[in-house]
Length: 421
Image (cartoon, rainbow, N blue to C red; front, side, top):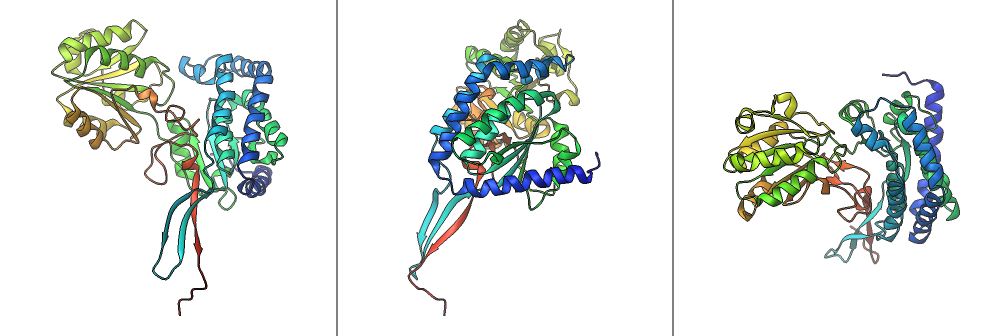
């Protein structure tokens, strides 16, 4: 743990108080200025794409020994930069969540009650590697009427700064306070500790990164946390699976992008179809460079596979590595997931509707899919425009966290002079 010096504490205090003042203005800004800021920021990202690309190349050059999956998460390409700009515009097109009437009723005494969505206030976002989080988190918090203080990993410093500058330009062009979206003013690791202890200044902490980061946040935070656990995701190929569908879905679920949290880490395959289907699944993935850890039953079918241990089944690889276990039906699959999963995302491939319903009802995970890739666990694919993370806790929000999940609520009560007497 890094000691929090007076200088670090003062930096946090200054940034958080500026964010608090900005949040107050955002909460009353209305929809038009927020949307204008997002569109101006999108234009700035497109105009400054070469500078963003150069900043990203500086970050990549400073860390030559990264794993392939980590490098993929850190890398910005022209299509990914354009996707950030489009993401800002998509958030601008979404309905404003602030001020929505969530429920309304009238009591016998004539009092009218409304439950109304309102901004959270100041959000602290702590993330690793992915510089695009700067744009996604900034856009969502802005549209949801909250200020955000972003502390990214040191490996993405230059990229994040270049992106944040575009967001600030958008805010300024729309007449909104630039302090509504701030990067941490220092890469001192103690600043993270200061954020975690900033009760009264920061209203919610959202960690987005590996198990080590999330564990630290959960252990040290004195501020409420929207937890994002590791993505120990499973795809279960049921006995009634369509073989061609199973092959296509698993290939995407594992290898589309191995470094995202929705990547499948374990294949569960029903014993009834494993002898005929497992060799095909393994061959498909092996041809793309995937490696395997398999239980004894799977190795009896595919003898060349490495043996799997409990440690393997509990590992989020974020790489071209897949665990394999042969199971005896839905209940056995569910038992495996309960033992090793992280309650993130699970999928079943089957043509049997009853089996699918039993599986989806039996998982505790934030997201369950039937006949679709686990890589669809993404805010953009849910229609949220973007996401600030995947919540795996059980309070406030679960699954991809978009605009609605970044709001809390309050009550408005309207009377005609009623008194309790």
